[in-house]
Image 1: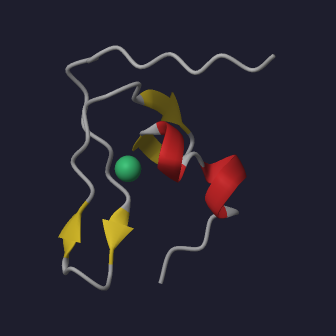
Image 2 (image 1 turned 90 degrees about the horizontal axis):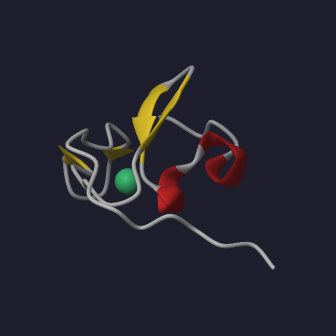
Length: 52
Ligand SMILES: [Zn+2]
């Protein structure tokens, strides 16, 4: 069972959405990674660091 923590953290996901020309900006469940704060959808382990 993998529970995802979906609390609003006050940090913003900095994942760059190239298709939309903006950062994700989600504040839900954001955690700090080497690459910066990321929401669960953009966890570097999920995106495999696929920044453009
Ligand atoms: Zn995100």
